Image 1 (cartoon, rainbow, N blue to C red):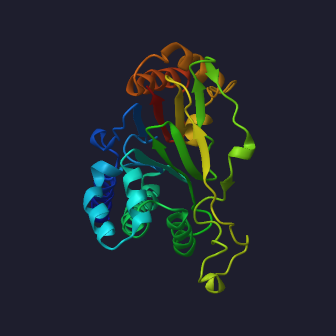
Image 2: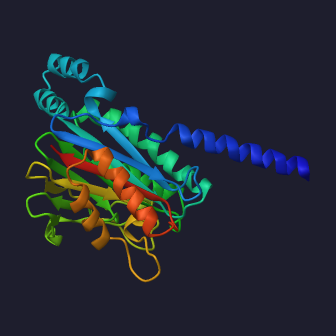
Length: 299
């Protein structure tokens, strides 16, 4: 019995090590002219959990020039144009798997590898990432996991012009703090189309939809939302529900206390803002869920 217990502990430690290897590192942070980015995940158990961040600095992760040359030789001008635009933007994915146990990180790892593999195909065939990648991810997870285990996801691309284009699968809405107005701005719901969590409903335009059995029906095609950081010093936060639902039992940290802290630290770098907000929210209350957030600041 003890031998089996020791083996289980070793297997869990091995899993934690594998999961930690897929955690976003400081060197993965995108570098863009005029845009400062910093963020992390804080697992509730201190090791790994269900939150997961993936950064895509296109010019750093991929050989865009080689792809541009190859597409040009084949006369694929649209692909060339898309790849050139990728040089001035970066992708950010923030996923939240239902549950916050160590083993919930398995779905996050599956998403990590599937997403990055799909991104390569997207760049090679389209010159940029399209919603088709997320349709395929959604259908694949629907067919490989139970409805009770799902993933909320936001994936967006921030450009050097401050434009943030994104899709949301039941993920919390980004927050934009305006330096000019010194407050969190209201964003019209008409600008924020969201969809069911990844893996709960198959995609309506899936060519294999007749092979899918679904209780909840089919999901409509993903649509892209857009938010702009219009002014210098504007700040945007992407976050998981562990961040937005943090409570001390009588009040919630989000958005009132967050806004007050952003007003106080708005002149800091993205990393400085992140660290100040993190310290503030941990002082406010002990977390009861994984917490992740990413600060994007226009300089």
